[in-house]
Image (cartoon, rainbow over all chains, first blue to last red; front, side, top):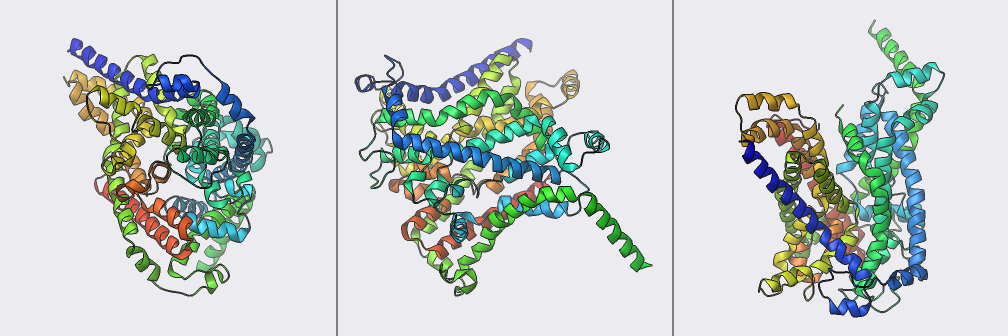
Length: 286
Length: 310
């Protein structure tokens, strides 16, 4: 019995490690391709061994005006979007975490319904047109600023906090807004970090808003430029922004993928240890 | 008497509302945002029943009944996308949903903490990459002439396959790439739930002579059942809305017949001929399907005696 257990354990561990290794191979390939010069690229079709790292493509990416502009737009959207999202999510989550708030059920139901029944992209286009937000940078973050799932995560986390925290703060003379800023936000660090990362990643990866709501190619974020580069490698698309006219090379496309993944990879280890705590505490049912 | 108690209750409510006035103040921005960016578009879906003109607006455009829906169902591309949406959603429910439970169960058997954290770190990561990047990765691996998959097939003596242009392969690519990207992320909830199961249950079952398989079947799975049922409802409710980014970045005209879904059809048609009303009609259909499936799965899970969300 004991022996049998260890054998099956070894099989499970081996299987999981093999799966993990297989998942990593494509990413390794991207790195290798982006660092190969055209000769190595043609000589080794498997792209699994790194010969002589050649950073010239990254150099050309970071000196290209179109890409830098895209990075700037993406960065701006992330910063402004994150700020707006956190204001909405934290203030809304905090208010709705109070079980005795009159009207709470109504507001919660209203928010949850929108999670499963939405108007879709066409009506949003018409709405943004009416509001005069089409072709402005606001179209890239305002329509997606509040995410119901994240709001509920924050709300549930705050509901699970001990009530004494608030009582103590109110005895010390804090009103709700002061309590939120001085007491609640500091103790909610795990869930707020987790939700921040979700928002930042969503804004960073969002090509769709730009594709639907922008005509002006000067406002294209990196994600959309990347999409145009990748699509242009397999299809003939007449007008492409940021690709400089002729079809980009494979190395260029792969290097751009790495640039777009970099912020996520840098943030990931900082936030990773909070995920489980943030998500599980937030998922507790009331 | 009755009147007085009403007055009493009103007074109490007024008192409570006043007590919470700062909280309402905090609630204003969120509610405003939901009204404008969630409920106005839902109201805008009424365009599906109109012949919408920008100049006339929603209130001024003529009502045309179900004409837009008839136009839609007369289009073979829409009908195909409609059918594909169901088939692909069903494949996801059957294959993608259980995959993360399986991963969590396997991880639960691993005692070595280093192995656990390596596997978790790597499998969570792709969740944060966009489908645009993932499409770049998949195009590379599945490329017809030099992709890793075809090099492998060639090594095994098989003919190379143009995966992303093959109608037969496309849905399977969707399923496997979805698993690849989300398996780790979706397993988080189950891993945490498994960690929360009481070790006393296992000990007493082992004292009763339960073997490993019996432990998994009679202790672990019943312990996970509430989490699984809630995740199932949420998954089924959301499965029709997911997949746009994935399909949109992976497909091409050669695989429309098996890969096109309602969401991608909407965007393509909208970019092609800008017909607001017909596009709204397809949005309306899709949102209704989502809602129906959420309610039905909630009902079924309730009937099975598991926890439901409403």
